[in-house]
Image (cartoon, rainbow, N blue to C red; front, side):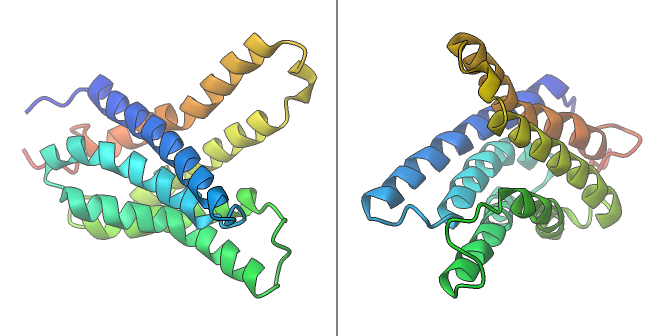
Length: 191
């Protein structure tokens, strides 16, 4: 079977977009119920959307779609749930934004949880290293999105830059994981 990078990229882009939409919808729904400070719903929306679309392509190589979605979504939820619990028990202030720390934690947790689904196909160290690179680069993209106040005079330019930076992580994930999942030298696919 022939695997195409553009298809993997497309599934990741669509998954990232779906994740962002679910993140926004679930965050707004939480606000309606006066629960806007709860952050785990953001991780749930992002993880569900991203992994759901990936699962359609990954099933071609024998990955169980439901397991992939559940494990990946849990990986996305846990750091934010931990942040919510720490805020609830007053270890940290609820208003403190720990997104940068959560992203670094996600970078370790998500690939370890995902690896439970693909463990017979790829080594943990390869999957963890490649994914951690993705999460660090994604964190840098988030930092760039949140630190562009100097462009506020140019709304169209800000929109374009935001759009590129929001979609960039899915492109990075596609590039970084392609070699592990589908390339003949490192492929998890058994010919």
